[in-house]
Image 1 (cartoon, protein in one colour):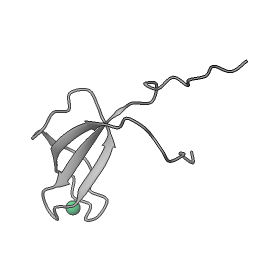
Image 2 (cartoon, helix red, strand yellow):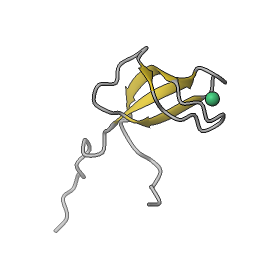
Image 3 (cartoon, rainbow, N blue to C red):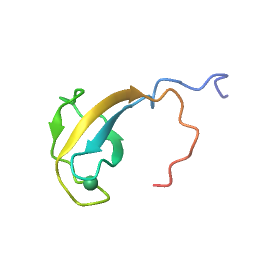
Image 4 (cartoon, rainbow, N blue to C red):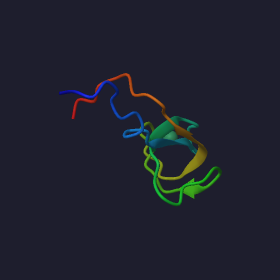
Length: 70
Ligand SMILES: [Zn+2]
């Protein structure tokens, strides 16, 4: 028997948005403990390879419409 409603909050993982200091590219990745807005983090920019990025926002995705191909 299947439940009528799937658990909604199971995959509501926050996303951290990062801005590259060097080329101003925006990137996002799953939230890590200790992240907060305007924190400088050592993350590699996917575009220019710089490893200094700024946290610009942290958001919770309510629904994941796309299926992950992992
Ligand atoms: Zn960059």
